Amino acid sequence: MCKFAFPTLGKEPDFVILKAMDYLDIPVNSVKPFPWGGKLGLFFKNTKGDTLALKGVCTHMECNITYKPEAMKFYCACHKGGLMKEGKI
Image 1 (cartoon, rainbow, N blue to C red):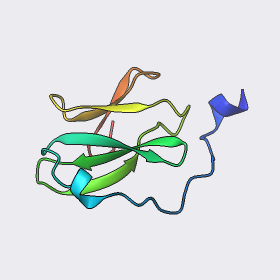
Image 2 (cartoon, rainbow, N blue to C red; image 1 turned 180 degrees about the vertical axis):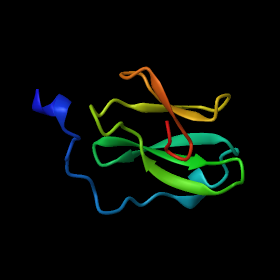
Image 3 (cartoon, rainbow, N blue to C red; image 1 turned 135 degrees about the vertical axis):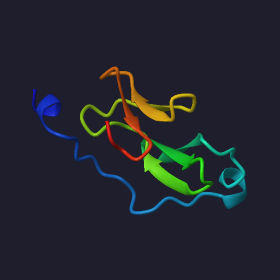
């Protein structure tokens, strides 16, 4: 019950080292997964070509997040909902 009511507070690494050549050449409006400790990380390149490294799990129940490029939204299957790429619903 507590896990459902409160955001998760699991231990995550302070930093993750990635090989730049494996991630910088991904197409715009796409993601490439990487390990973020024991969780999913997503390397995201937006339509402007800017890149972000994101935690790829929802903060509510730690469900894995996917990116839907056609809708330009991140999607949580557990909540059947999406977040815009800026993090807004």
